[in-house]
Image (cartoon, rainbow, N blue to C red):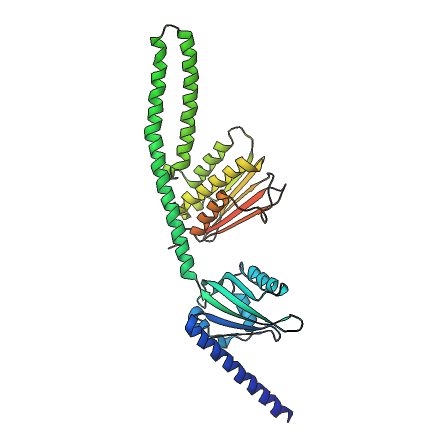
Length: 358
């Protein structure tokens, strides 16, 4: 009798599960989403058939579905996802919305927008069930990257034009003015006084020329003119350290010069420009460590200063940091920042090389 009862209960559970999956399939036909149902009490999880179409998995082949799902969330995103789920439960929230990457059967990842609803029991407000819908937003993410890159390309073209105009026109005009003012002393009676003013004017014009050269260097895209990325980085570090106010430690993997495409070289240079500008303006640092290395097909650039730092969790990112982040994201990379008051600032970027990027 006990065996028969056990078989009967199992049959009922199978029928109940089949009906639940059928409901998910009907819902998914209208939304094209992958529906998941997490039974928190019994620690089990179900997916509808759309998981096969969206990710290429035959879900019936998986024994521990809950564990399998966690293993296929991108390792960098998993802590964020789990933290969001548990915080939602802790705060008795009814809904959760978040984005993460989920691995496909072929090994690549898709960007997912996941919306979940939490069901609580009526007595103790304890979670008993969570139902979610996974939407594939990979195309939208790729389009965002293309748009961001197009904006950066447009900015570079604009900088090229402005830089050339400053160099070819304004510089030449100022240089001609310098020569003209230098001749004034030959046409005035009070030569000593005129020469004094001329020398002052010349000094000012020289300063203006130097500033224009710096501005041109900032605006003209880093075509490098035969110089390597390492050479350009060294030149930039020398420019900011004319007064030897910094102890600079620079390490560069020579393999990067051959691996990194021209567009990425320009953006790496722009990112470093932005960072050293921030260090000069805000950090009050005495030392800068810059390491650029290659790990597989990924370029890693790490910049560390020993300045005053800030609370990176509380301080809102400014235009400079946002610009760096956008540049990194446009190349499918990862931007991270660590800083605490009194403990300096560390910025790490990881970007795939142009070798394998379409």
